Length: 339
Image (cartoon, rainbow, N blue to C red):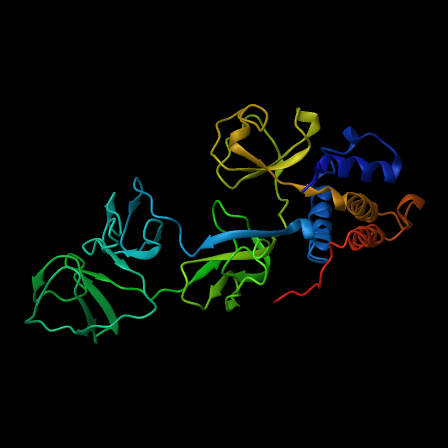
């Protein structure tokens, strides 16, 4: 996707209003600009399924198990070597859910399943590691993690509770592209395999629920509209993962919004420590629309009762022009969104 810096939108919008230089607006009116840009970017982004914003990615339903990560009871992971999902029954580090023969490490992990079976717990029975029982007192299933007799399934020294497996993909997940609209869930890459088989799914408030019994899927989706919330970068501030900044031209930056992806110390900017920051890309195809729509909002915010001639044209005109260009290239397909 070809991008445009936020400062270019600001410069263009301000020039349409009164022709003054960008330096006269970046500080005092920045929040007005940021709000107008955020709102109008969402309008453009969600107007249709723009081909350049449609992604195809292979997804699993849980984060992958990592040998150096510490896990606690209840954590759920995907084990790449076996292609299976597991839930932690007790704390561990370095204990793989399955061995090279795909045998379950039952003292620490249980394979995730949609449903479990087991006899009712009996106080006089001796249970071995890996045994599963049903406990009527709380309608739950438990797996033995340490051999014992007479210890209730609620005793976490000897038992781990089992949770039913839901095949879900969160719209927003660390390290993954955020999902806006779902186009389809497939067995194979839908752009490489003609007539790739579709999987059935439903949509929740914050996740996709896949209904077929599969380990991984190919997801086709429209990337979520990015939020623009960052204040101007300060060299004396430390930033945490997830914080957003606007790195203005006046402070030596590129005039873009950035998300912090690794915690910083004071003075670690996108220029000095680029690996700690991720730029928020604004599609260049929206540039003219955003310039004109932002200029309109800034004009109204300033209390002007009439629009300058330069911005009297409806900004939507520029979005329609982009659609015509895509139609000429044969890049627009049937626009259907499952909501």
